[in-house]
Image 1 (cartoon, rainbow, N blue to C red):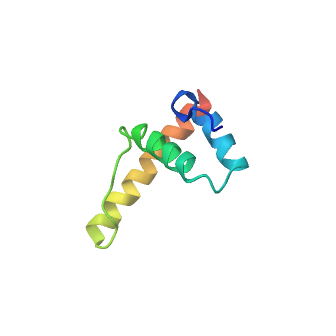
Image 2: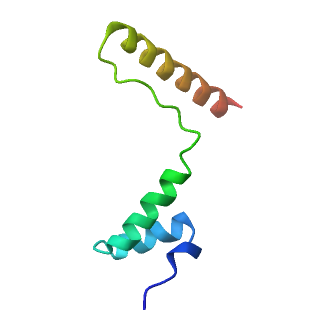
Length: 73
């Protein structure tokens, strides 16, 4: 009998999936759960032009700055 994936935490679901790598249902439940938690993720254009490269570089620098401030603080 399979566990109830809907009641499992992401960590529990991930651990289950590591032990049952061929369980497609568990994989899709985990993927759906991770996607649902990614609503606040910033999406940037593919850096295929000089303008997009500049946007990506600025975004990376900003993220590095935030992580450094968080680590210091």
